[in-house]
Image 1 (tube, rainbow, N blue to C red):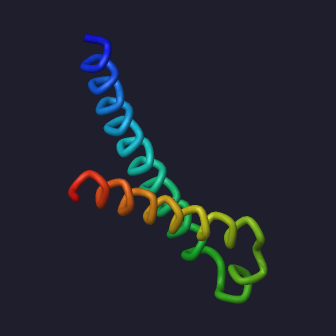
Image 2: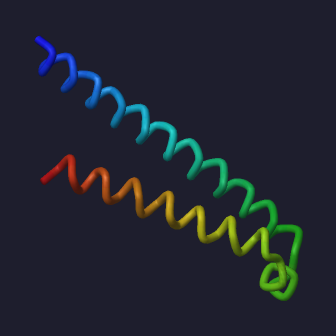
Length: 73
């Protein structure tokens, strides 16, 4: 019983994690699009916050892909 409960909780946690990551990926993508629409390339290159958000955005994408890979092995 404890084993099954633990497995269900783990499955639910993975589902919630993927949902959260997907929502954050969408949100960061929207913000990046807005920034790129209002700043030229030089301004984007000079912004530490923009660069950090780009790095985070692609890390989210990679995390989603790695989790899905593990689930689909």
